[in-house]
Image 1 (tube, rainbow, N blue to C red):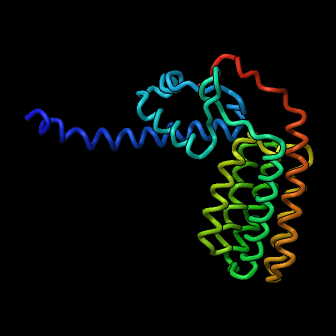
Image 2: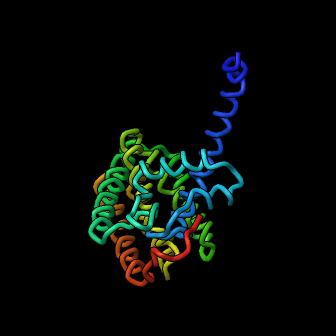
Length: 237
């Protein structure tokens, strides 16, 4: 009898906790991506649950998902922290990003529609118009690249890019906010778009790779200038 009375409430609770776990995951992911939770920063389930006003169960689910994606790791004496990539790993990450971006641009040159080209132009203009507004620049830049990936018409490429972007979140912050970068990015996007209009796969791939190379140079400079994280500082939710 007791187990039968429990059954009706089990599924709604599970559904709600899945929703809360998703919310907690996205909040944590965005905190990492924006640099609010920097590499090496500690993460406490109790503090996060209190901040979000939810129980620890959905928070634990969110944390486990971030661990499975490699964004959080356990460090002796420090506990759960945001993963810190080595210089070598960052270089390798950008090398793979250049490959995927170049491949996406090449494939898009073969499959892109006129409507998708127009969308890319509009998104690039949105990036130009957003200069000075960090969040708007990040959103416009992300939308541009997502549209490029979709224009490639290759779901396997899209899956690989999504996984790579999760790793990129560990770098925190954004390169488009660097001095002079937004104008440079807009010009480089224009080069990609021009190649797509010509259906020139070679030129599209080259333009995309050059775009990533300049982003890597800026990122490495940002990392050199960033102060080191104190792993023993007060834990962050």
